[in-house]
Length: 315
Image 1 (spheres, rainbow, N blue to C red):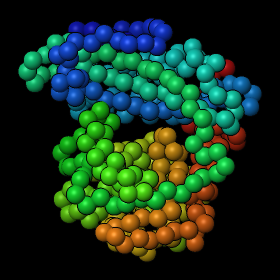
Image 2: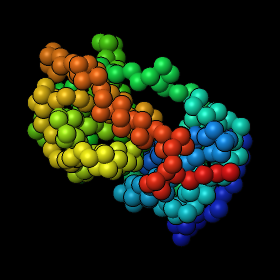
Image 3: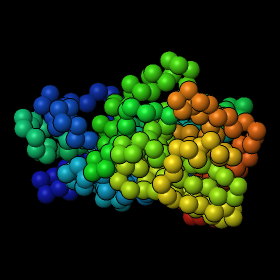
Image 4: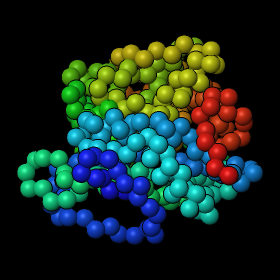
C-alpha cells in the first residue's frame, strides 16, 4: 500500500516477494522514519490458519505511527492486508505443531527529503517467511546478563513503540553478551540504572511466591501483545500480577524469571548475571513459566478452545 496526499492509504495489492524501489534520500534511510510489527500464523490440526490478536498489532502500529509523524492504515486495512498476505502464502504455513509463518508488517517513509521533515510518501508492506518451532524437545532456559552501560530507551524517546531505530542501538551489547556465552541482555532504566526494563526484544517478568511482577508501562517499555496476554492469563489462573518499578535486586530473591514476546512466546530464564554475580533459577523447575507458556501457546496454535476471543480463523 502507498499513502495518498490526505494521509489515507490505497487498498494496495499482492505481489511476489522481491526487492523494492526506494529513493536514496528516503526518510526511512536517512532519518529512521519507520516502524515494524511482528505476528505469527499457525495451522491447526484441521488445516485452518490461525491469527492471534491481529487487531492489537494494527492498533499498536497506528500509535507508533502517530509518534513518528506518519500516517498509517486503518486497523481494518491492517487486518485485511495481513489476512490476504497469509492466505496467499497458505502453502508456506508449517503443519500443526511444526512451526509458524512469521508475518512482518513494515511502515516506512519514502520519497526524497533533504532536511529533517516527514516523508512526502509512505509505504506499508508485509512479508512472510516460514519458521520451525523454536522449542523442539521442550523449553530451553536462557542465560542472561544485566547491562550496566548501554540503555535501550529513555523517557521521552520511542522505547514504547516499535521504531526501527530501537534495535541497531542495542546490537553492540547483545553481541558482547553472546561473545561471553550469554543468550541475551537485560536492560535497566536510563535514569537510576536500577530498575528492570526489557530484554533485547522481549518483556521481563519476575515470579515470587504467587506474585508475578513486570515493569510498568511508562514511556520506555514496549506494550507487548504477548505481555498483555500473559497478564490476563495469569490473572485468570489466580496469580497476583503487579505492574510496577522492579528493582534489579529482586532478581536475587526471585523464584523464577521469564521473558515473553512474539517470537519466543514465553521463555524461562535459567540464570542472570549482574556485575559478575550469578543467580540460578533451575531449582524452581520453571513451573510458572511452563504453565503460562502452555496456556498461551495452546490458544495460539488452536490446540484448545479460545475462550478469550483472541484468535481469528482463516478457512
